[in-house]
Image (tube, rainbow over all chains, first blue to last red; front, side):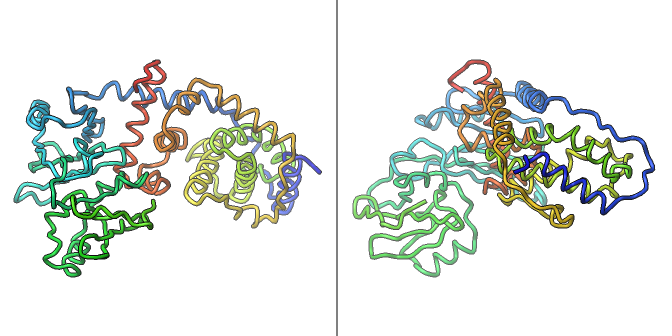
Length: 247
Length: 176
């Protein structure tokens, strides 16, 4: 069997013969590339170096950096145990960001579960948005001078009777907590379950979901597009986790 | 450039760049078969598209690696190697021989030993993939997001976090 190089060369030369055209140029030799890894290393070093020019401001709870394109990345480096102090940290960094506690499973207590941005009234195109990734880093995008309110939701222990998403009980599902809620899905849940499920009780931790009621105490929610299910439970009453909870 | 369709000259061109192009893919994809397949499709695409080469748009090397990069992007996206150019030219595929596989493995092993590769390997897979796609393959955030199945904003954050972690690793700070 011919080796890969020889086989490919022969096939290409044969194909070239079929496509042969008059030569018009003697230029043929191409300059050799620098070693690929050297180029790659330079790119990485350059990019890593650009981070050095970012502006870390954070203190105990948040690490706040402004990237070269103006994107603000808010990284939580420790659990939010003292909301006032954490809020003061954000204020000191110059961000109009507020903190709001929402009921969550124990594993999410003190951790960011969602973020939301609302432009100030009259801002037609505020270009203000937030997003959290699967490692609970909040990315805040805002044009300089943009007015609006940014709220970061973090977990607090759920009280008796409060609803929350038990998605932390399934490996890999915790990352789903920060997905955006669409109005359509919100309405679908309200239509399906009416006053029994109050949207404010579902709260920010629930994002792109559909829901199916199992019984009077439990509802299974489907995280759209990610084939994941989690049980919505009433704390202190039923904490039933369905067999179908997979990521 | 049109002279490249001269069979012998194209053969020389192939000889001068085969190792480089194979190395380009070998350090970017894990499978030797995939690297060899991408390499073959790159040269076939060069031959098939030689009439479109415009020296005013860039050097021949840039053009060659532009094709290679585009094929790599499509592979990242679709997780399959296209064969359009080879099909058009009627180029038969061949199985990867032991010598070439050993060469690719050697290149990959050398790449793995580089400080950069060692540092990259210490990143969580989701961050490493994002960094590699952004910096080595130069994908846009929207493209990275498509590959990773996340939003462009999340892809950007992953790259950012990956670079920060990478810097810590390369600085010898295990706390990253």
